[in-house]
Amino acid sequence: FDTAIDGEQAFIQAHTMKTNFHTCTFMQSSMYRQGEKLTDQPTSERTDSKITFSYHHQVPKGKTLSIHKFGGYTVDLNHDKDQLVSTAKKVLANAHQMGFPSLLEKQKRAWAKIWDMADITIEGDSKAQQGIRFNIFQLNQTYLGTDSRLNIGPKGFTGEKYGGSTYWDTEAYCLPFYMATKDQNVARNLLIYRYNHLDKAIKNAEKLGFKNGAALYPMVTMNGEECHNEWEITFEEIHRNGAIAFAIYHYHRFTGDFSYIKEKGLEVLIAIARFWHQRANFSTNKNKYVILGVTGPNEYENNVNNNWYTNYMAKWCIEYAVECIQTVKHDHPHDFKRMISNANLKGEETYDWLKVADDMYLPFSEKHQVYLQQDGFLDKEMITVADLDKSQRPINQKWSWDRILRSPYIKQADTLQGFYFFEDHFTEDQLRRHFDFYEPYTVHESSLSPCVHSVLAAKLGRMDQAYEFYLRTSRLDLDDYNKEVEEGLHITSMAGTWMSIVEGFGGMRIKNNQLSFTPQIPEQWNSYTFKINFRGQILKVSVSKDNTTFSLDHGTKLTIFVNGEKRIINYETTY
Image (cartoon, rainbow, N blue to C red):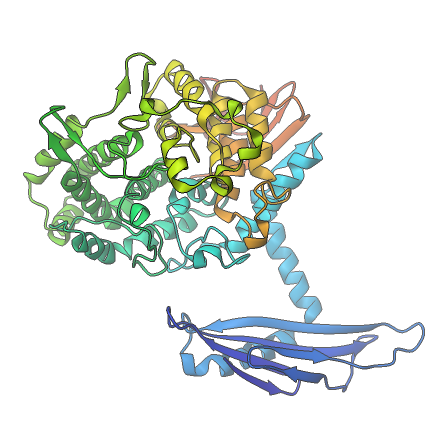
């Protein structure tokens, strides 16, 4: 740290040891009486890493005294590290010239614009309303999406746990919120963030013995390099590659923007397909391709064989990569030539990939008629959460790790995560069987768990259960469910609160490149309203106990489906 004081201004320069970041934290404070700036200078106290200003002033009776404080940061991500203080002084000069009232009004206008698009209003349930608004606020505080070098840490800026790094949470949970409530370039920047790390993802895979441009994205990262140090996560929780590929698919499906795939995304998909092709091996015993030694989304299982979600995601990634290769080849031959040159793609490669995808082993129980979370899952002592003594919860704080690993308990949606992503691949009856089989063993000790279960419960028409999960995800931090809020908020799971309402209760899906809705409403609510930015048109959806109203806030004509029926929205329409 290096501290400096210049009259009413203070500066603290810091240099992080591991990441080599340089920052300058700065402030300027002034006193005003009845709008007139006073000449009083602050009394300062300084330590190696802290500067404190204090004022002593006698305020006449009936007069008003105010202190205006401007503060901020300059970082070497955007400025030369030797110019951080001088840049900070320029920022302070501009702020002082604009004045506090003008800056306040500018801030109000900026937030009003954000709330106009992102707000969800709920009538009749103040706890539910407070929960969603708290989460929407935190999500917008954390990420605005103007810089593709930045991403969303699980704690945002609210705590030091996880070190501000990026996880697969961004692609799996956060992308839908930003995609539907912001300009599409915000979501595109999240994809570009991963594209910019592709070379390091390839090097990461090379360290583990993969070749020919196969990529394994890091589990935890700031700059594309792996920051996690637990082998069962770093080397085995490889399903994260699938979330990155799925985000590309979801972005194209929602925005209709194929340019990202032909310009950048296809290289990522090719590298990920290569990884899955090499990571799988052929089992002569099963006469299928298998993926051994993995950790699925349920981190209460480590080093298992044939995690269904991982295997299914690997199969899908390969098939989707081949589909995109064919589309670019047919529709964008110039981009295709450049892409295959960059990726050094050989024609016969895709045939080898598809052999793996076509013969991927997916563990299945004939007795229960469900896909198994992994090989051997039914060998466990199958005691449901309801039969577990409450004094043993949460198990991650009460049990030894070996006991957790031997149990059937599920930290968060694992097999059901696949049913959430690939809903159209399965019937509602299949979803019901899998939900009824796995949810009773799920302890929901990950902040990412309740939202997926809320969406799926709503899909099954189980609104009481969906509402219960919604309250848990929306008020996780407000009510400190996990007794750990002192470590910071759960920013990435907050996007799941939005999912629970829009995708769960609102039933929003993308089908055949068009919005589809199957709206429902919890018994506890009188109505709820949200907006969706779909391909440049702003659709407002209002659901009450009696009807659902759709209107265009921006745009001229939008075709949607409501409960399977085609509707054309060019003015306010009620059903």
